[in-house]
Amino acid sequence: MNTSHDTLAATSSAATSSWNRHDTQWVLSLFGTAVGAGILFLPINVGLGGFWPLVIMALAAFPMTYLAHRGLARFVLSSRRSDSDFTDVVQEHFGQGAGRLISLLYFLSIFPILLIYGVGLTNTVNDFTVNQLGFAQPPRIMLSGVLVAAMVAVMLGGEKLMLRAFAILVYPLVAILFALSLYLMPNWQMPSTELVASTDFAINLWLAVPVIVFSFSHAAAISSFANAQRRHYGEQARPKADAILKYTAIMLITFVLLFVFSCVFALSAEQLQAAKDANISVLSYLANTYNNPILAYVGPLVAFVAITSSFFGHFLGARESFNGLVVKHSNLTHKKADKLGVALMFIAIWVCAVYNPSILGMMEAISGPIIAMILFIMPMIAVYKVESLKQYRGKSSTYFILLVGALAVSALLYSLLG
Image (spheres, helix red, strand yellow):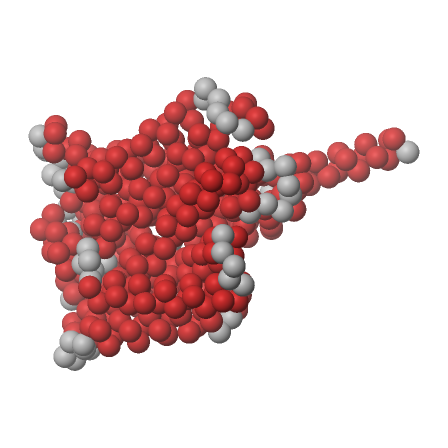
């Protein structure tokens, strides 16, 4: 009997250590979560800093992405309960008061992204209507209201079906962006490698950190990802989660860096600045700049799909975290909290889309730093507070992630004070 039991255990261990379809599906799912509107604005921000910040970003992107998401997944998996979501784990380790604050920050790390997507979608459709279709510019208050209402209506119509449909759209989206990266190669021109003043160089690089954090983030999916690995692999969940996140980061960095480098090498600094001033994605700018009828229509379409699919995923996350916060700390039922949350988010996104603040400015000042608090700083603090994470204390990766988080958050303070 013991021999049979040992054989079954060995077989189970081998099954969990080998790569399988479950792992591949999660790599693609996390990749799809990360590939959204962020990468459509990343070439503009990083490219404006010059050649050397671009190189430094390329070198730092993998450790930033992999180590940070690995730390957050390990934090979720550190719970004594097998079904704990992010909010539950936070309260378990930090207590009710701190847990409430961190849970609020978690909501605030997702919600501003919806504001960014509302602005980005309105600008993409507006730009396409004027430049590609040749129509008069529609009233912004009406255009943004219709777009935001349509997206919220789709969400209310059934999240699961909607998410499956947009998960499928990730693959043609990736294929088209890859093809665009190759299409731009004949137009590559080496950007200036001249070093700017050391102070300006350091500030440009520093302020780019929150945008880089935002662009590569798939933190919204990490809680459900970690719990799925725990259900599927049991005690092997942590090493399997590490492996899946590593391959996700490799795939993500390879794809995104090709797209970013291709855009930056194909556009001048003046063109990148024009795209930033127009508050449009790099794809919309390329569609207006290059005399190619296919690109003129495909560019805005890809931007529309990328922003819309990301909007749906983040709306679902914001809606769930808002409901969790309100239900736990008020007398409202889940149904009433959900209605209140949807109404408030619709109004906020619409107002923001009408106001049209700088998308890159919002990434720098709001989303990037708050994501950094949740993704970089909080899990590393937990390493020194939670007994089950003590084996990671003193590791160089822990200090690196803390440093990146501190840079992103301090960039927020600099922007506010500046």
